[in-house]
Image (tube, rainbow, N blue to C red):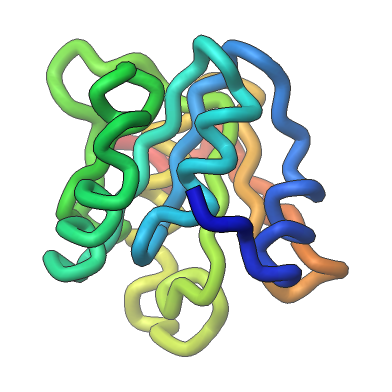
Length: 149
């Protein structure tokens, strides 16, 4: 596994990870951060989603060993279309770096993206995005009607 860039290492270091967590990475690109998170959550799991089929293929290839071990999975889907699969457990934490629907570059997608993320998180689940030092937390109300399914 190649080492993370200093920027991605700072992001992963800033996440409040603990063993056994279920983590959702939004827009994971080639999967470098997801592989590192998978190592840190041990018997937990990370699902990396990305709207780019090329990114999903790259991550699937570069993380084949971690995926085969059951600690990581990848899914080709845009965050504003994401939903838990039938029987899939919710996530404890979600994060996204340079995701247009979350960082203001695609404001028309922000509402639906936040709704989809809120619906995929367990009660008390947390969302982190870039734009802080290095991350900032976005509060998602768990019971707000605008976040209902």
